[in-house]
Amino acid sequence: MKTTLMVSAFLLLFVTGCKELKLSEIDFNNITAEDIQKGISFGQRVYDASKDLTPEQEYYIGRSVAASVLAKYKVYDNKGLNNYINTVGTLLTLNSEKPEIFGGYHFAVLDSSEVNAFATPGGFIFITKGMLKLCKNEDELAAVLAHEISHVQLRHGISSIKDSRWTAIGTLLATSATKKYGTQELASLTESFEDSIGDIVNTLVVNGYSREYEMQADQYALNILNKTGYVDFSMVSMLNTMQSVLKNDKRGFGATHPQASERIESINSLIKQPSAVVNKTRTKRFQLYYKYV
Amino acid sequence: MYFLKIVIAFLILSSLSYAELLSVQVKHTFLRDKPSFLGKPILKLDYANQVENTKLQNGWHLVKSLKSGTVGWVHDSALSDKAIVLNSSQKVSTTSVSQSEVLMAGKGFNKQVESEYTKGKDNLNFSAVNKLESMKPQSINELSRFAKNGKLSI
Image (cartoon, rainbow over the protein chains, first blue to last red):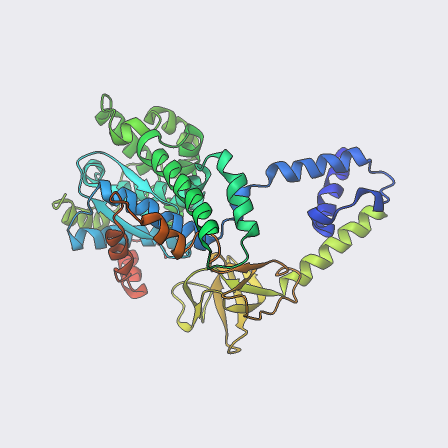
């Protein structure tokens, strides 16, 4: 009965539209106002102000975050290697839930020995030479890229904008009626924009995502790997490698990611191909580019 | 009885919105002749273009372009159920239940805000970002060959 009541409340929210629901106008017979109120409270709780950002706005945030990352790290000047990374990455996105995003996905190798990988909102995905060096084959590279694609699709970057900013952002987005702004409005928007970029860059480069987000991204990535045809166990083997290499390294990935052992534990039961044996053609073409790392 | 009415109303509204309008929410996409990225592109669609949705199959919408009447498949991730307008004077068809919300393209965090944000900052490298964006994407034939050789899916 309770379930029926809650389902009714849920459906009512859909049928009448959340904002227009007037309890006094509804004769529920078996449904109490308290039950409906619970439904409304639930709806309000799950409402996420970040959803007001359009994919276009997310793209502009992502461009600025990427500009900040690329001021700190240079793109590695090797066309063949960058093309290869883009091919593997694009193939993974085509097998994901969001193959098309506003500005498309862009992958690049960063010229740094630090072991790290970043993904900005809007689809800019970076992997360092240091991280690439740890990959033993294309499937492990795919595991790293799939993890970063997952952060984009799960909107973890946008979620790292502090809660306190959303009231101001929400008000600005709701009240501005045009896309060409006057001085005052532009100044307010730019301030919110700058604060948001700061939060995301800080999360990506300094603090890292929460354990929860990292594990979500790992699990989501397994689906992408499986749909594409890569061995999903490569996620475990890659994490094992990082565990042993980054034991005492507190830079980059070592500083911003939870212990690999915790991450392995959270995905172990989800692995569908528990074998480290990967396709020879894939490994061979990976080795062709690996020599440039 | 009331519960039943509510369920019926919900189902009717769901089915109505299903044959309604969708807007392109990415810079560009293609209408394809098959529900797959391997399908032949038959029409280029731009941001905010509207299409009429006919059916959804495994993440692909069979749609009709409002502009040209061309019918084809577009991936769900490229479409929004909100109407998107490029400027305030533009008229869009918003007769559908699902497109009752209208978004203005370029509103909020946009190019103008980005330009303002970059003023006086030397810790941003937009030229590298622009370079990345200008890189020619792999053709679907290249991707298909790459996938096939490595026994991967596309």
